[in-house]
Amino acid sequence: MKHPSIRANMPIVTVRPIHFEDFDGHDFERLVFAYLLWAGWRDVAWYGQTGSDLGRDIVGTEIFDGEPDRRTVLQCVNRASLPLTKAKRDMMRAFAAPSGKPDAFLFVCRSNVSAGQRDKVKAEGKALGIGYANVWSGAEFEEQLRLRGEFLLKRMVEGIPFPDDGKGLRKFVSEFAELSEVEAL
Image (cartoon, rainbow, N blue to C red; front, side):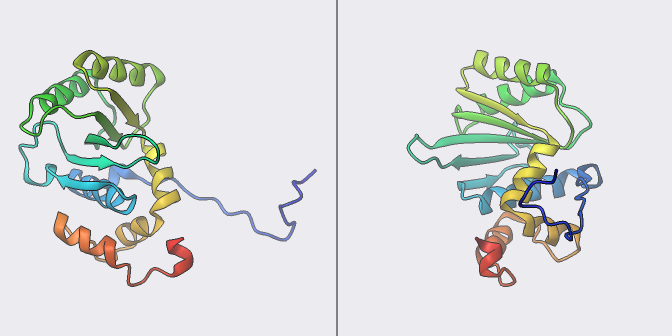
């Protein structure tokens, strides 16, 4: 029996996964940076675009309702896997960076990440004194994009010019000249 809300005459549409492996490291970071701006993070800085990021591709403040804001370091992992040695090294470097110890650390990966690997990354973060360490797999990041920033994907994947620098991306995300009210909601 079909669910009552599904109409028999509606076509079935399949959404194919995003191939993050087709993005170079710069474009993957750029997409994550633009997503954070669109998602309402504050004080977002893109350290990775200049190299020598000390384990901090992006740093921003995640805003919560009813909870304290979290200063978060993000590492964009545009690789086939997230090795624990890399995760630990990046968290240690970010912890020692001039910007100080973050409240949280988030790895945004292009690939799948096993439950065991997630647990190990979280344990390493906790051992370093980072209150919250998390991992988004490629599929999780894709769903975040589809939920909150589908227009970013369309612009980047369909060839609509997308700024290369942090200042240009801030302006781009704030203007949305082509975004209808329905898309914005």
